[in-house]
Length: 301
Image (cartoon, rainbow, N blue to C red):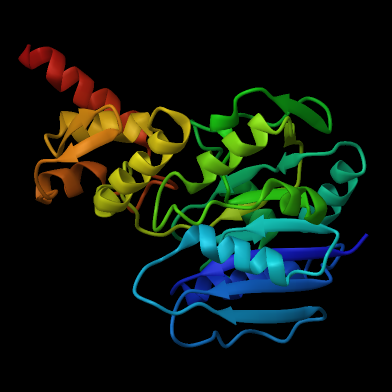
């Protein structure tokens, strides 16, 4: 079985370098790394014992769906492993996915450990990563065995998953009507669900998510979230990203509608302060922010 790692990158050169260094230290090397580069210049990357292809996708937007499709089309492997640019694969990530793919068809979703801000200061240290990494509270835990069925397509997160090239091609890939941030991965998993393709949690196949400042819910992507929620609604009869839309409504940024929401105003410092990931947090949480907003609304009622 041949394996292609597919990723997409915009900025975050240090994160991408760490992803490559992690792959170099894998107990099973991939056959290639395919990077959809969403910026004007290619990356300067370490030498590798596997092929690296940088595909240039320039423009003013960050077309996540189109970039993933481009990487998958270029990939030559039987198994496609998609890793976001801020992921460092654990040494057994590739071999775990190979083993899982020989036991089940469909989409395979490996574990993710979120790293603290200083976790990578001394380089790639998997022993340290395992000590400090935490699981995201909103993400399902690993199964007891090698595989566990995921019954809810909304649980799919695109930052670390694998799928056979044949299955990906048959699915039609990511819908490029989704442009920018939000909704394209939920649409992809909904499409697979409708096609009867199973989703599986995988024990292992771990990636460590590198810290970066972030906002959650993503007020900095308000416009693209609204546009993509409407695209999802036209396709499936209802919007997605409900928790983000609810939070935006409670903030007074939008009025919720049948197709997602109508923008009322731009986010201000209050919204950015409320959603900004703090330096001592390994990840930002929509659930925490939404709970605070709901409590605030209840107190004001």
